[in-house]
Length: 126
Image 1 (cartoon, rainbow, N blue to C red):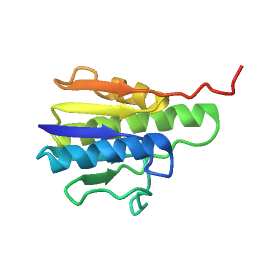
Image 2: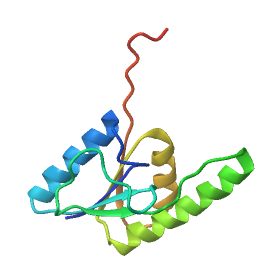
Image 3: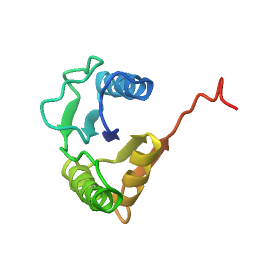
Image 4: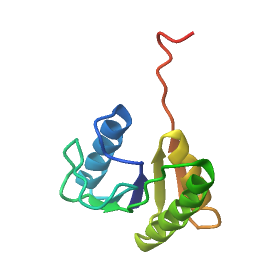
């Protein structure tokens, strides 16, 4: 199976650890795994990524004022759509709320299964 895993970056967070663990496991199981991030090319993952996992950094960081950020988000959607089509994914797995929305919009009308994941730890919050 060809899989595309989508997350904003591969820093030191919990979601980043989980998606890296899944990517490594699926690649070791013989699946074709591509990790798609919006980081600038050359950013190094915090957690070890199996050599069989292809890493594509789309260089689409959205920052700034609201109107400018909306334009950047549209560019992110189209860049992600192109990347998913290029890796010919059968399944797309996305982590974190904003990226999940971008992924759902990017895969609209593509013949691909999409799974989104959001986790929150509400302990200590009212």
